[in-house]
Length: 509
Image (cartoon, rainbow, N blue to C red; front, top):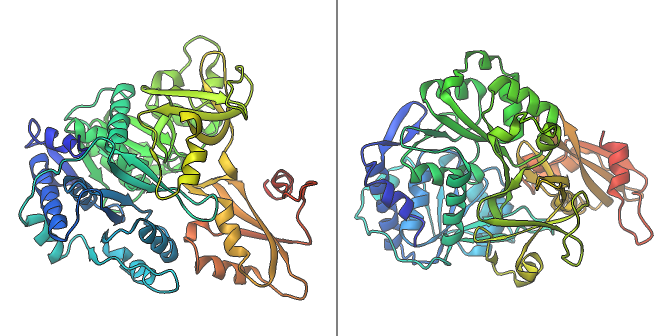
């Protein structure tokens, strides 16, 4: 079954219901959204796109994202959502790795697209279609081709994770995976109907966009802020305009909303849910959010390989239910989601007792089928039939999972995942740097900030400005270190491994 069935089904009973808004301006009903997506699907077929082909989405948050995404699925193709903040070299690698011949890109990303076509690892899609242009309007209005037949295990969403080993890996998510993710949300969230609304201040290319599938399935409205991002006064205005509003927000967004004077004008009667995830939320900050918003917070824990769907902490479990365990629950990432199995295991995949730490592993129809063209990484991640998340955590005796450490030293800043190694590898390309290690340090607004500890090569003068330019030239700006520390050497164990725990004690406070 094609995941586009969610839209074709919804467009029948909810044909005249509003589907897409730009701010407070309605852009399309469900019937119109289906017609526009079908037009995009027909255009893709006329460009030679066949079922299974990859089509890139390098787009800022705009309402047309939904037309493009469902258009790709109508054609039976595989969507490749790309973080709109990425550097041209990163874009070139992703598009080249999956051989995406067609790219949908917003106008503000075209300069980056052009730069992706330069250099030794350049990649140029054969065609780029830009929302808002005459060519886009012609595609939308062109002959529809209907929904392509696909198998449940055909790839629908190819999501490139940040590169823990220097290069990102493409997690292959099937139509079956996305259906089960959607069903799990519908089972675990409060009931959703056609009178509800999903706001999209978080990137639609990530969890926020996947969440929209549950709302689209129920004929609810999807609202893209005019700013395309998270601006607290704008979010307050939109919640006040749309009853039954929910949104996905990284903890940093929740904190920004809490600190904004605009919160005084928020109509809480219109706010259904703040679905938060993507980074840890400190207990004290969570208590502040509960005091301000009431019982409207819902936590999701997942990863690109099991999108948004490993554990959850529902609204009622954010409250004191008289069991004396509120603090432990708020510090946890909740209980297993509907339709998945979650375990904590030792190095031999044996379950560890409650209270003991181990690796979090997960199994279910929401788990990816593997990494694109990377059988070695697939075998490592999916060994013994379970997804090995790399996250370290522990269960308590009631089944609540608490994460103890994040996988592979990942840094989460502003809700975006940053893996130290890809930053370190850029720093080490400088001829004046002999060693580099990157860690995260707590930041009041962004959750964490990137800190680099570097060792200069003898006889070389290297400045912070030199390294900052190097990073800006090679990786997305949000990944570059905000602070640099120059040292004579890095602490190591007997095997020569850098001791990041020691670096965090010195530079991570």
